[in-house]
Image 1 (cartoon, one colour):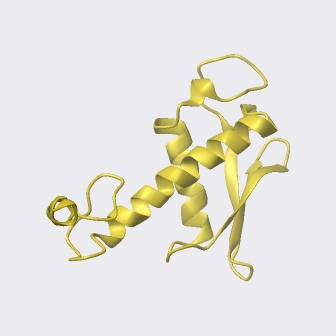
Image 2 (cartoon, rainbow, N blue to C red; image 1 turned 30 degrees about the vertical axis):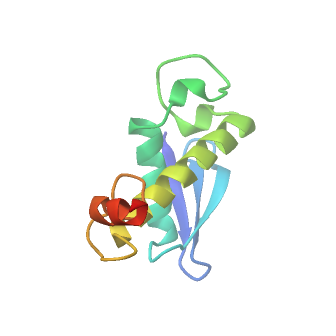
Image 3 (tube, helix red, strand yellow; image 1 turned 180 degrees about the vertical axis):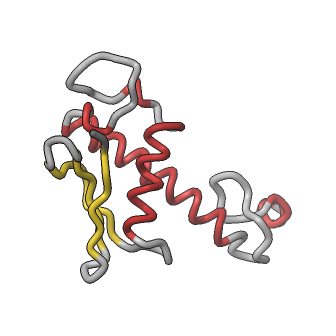
Length: 120
């Protein structure tokens, strides 16, 4: 009785499904930036459970439990959109500064030193 991930290695894609109703829902996760689809789906669920502004998303019922199955289609679309923006920032941080390769600043493509040099 939980949200699970169905992964297709041949298609390099993953979807969320409810293990109670056996019903798939939500976005299709694909391989991106050297991250497998299943990793991205896992990251989305973790983000939704721990960091997402869950209270702001439209749900089918009221409660404090963070459960992807409770989001309406519009709520899931909003959550997925927010997560994509957060994921892009994580990927930029993983890759490091575009100029020197050092760790990039929070949500940025440049490290603090290169940001200062760019402003000069």
